[in-house]
Image (cartoon, rainbow, N blue to C red):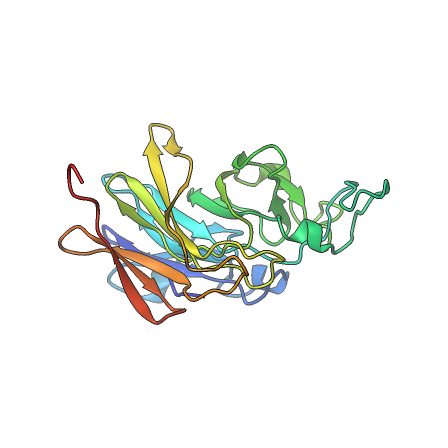
Length: 260
């Protein structure tokens, strides 16, 4: 994963990603992993403070312009077991505890989060429940690591502001002209590829609006990709630069001219 940092005022924000898909050891390491820590921007480890946890891979740390709001996208886990008695394959019986491609393909969603000081965002004990939509998602217990709820109370985890396509691998976040730009690197094990594009998320009075595609065409109808977007940056002339480690290029997106 990318090593993500942000500086805001006199504070340095550092994402420490997980070492695994889902494991308990990362929650008891020192420093704890799947977290965001803060440090005094001038240095010294003594200033280290745990800001938020339960974030498998916090990517694209960015403060919304003109605010103290830290937003991130999250590259979430894979291979989640069916957490409840749902009938995934339609044979009339419960598939609880099974590992099934039909379920894994669409679960769990990736995440777009406003980070709360002291927040807990589920991983690895709770997974976002997208059955009722992709906004303010609560959590389901992870069947492997928190089946009985003893490891974590999922009802007390911070809801996820907005879910993004499962396994699409968001790796960057840039605020641009009143919107959020999120490159999706693309899935590696989904039956049908997901991601491989750049999202434009307009901002509303209540937060992120509905994502729309800004740049696509990185993968063909047969699932073969030629590009994998990574991150975005705003150039000095206001155009948007997109890094792509699939083709080894930087793409420039230029807004249409007025009247064009």
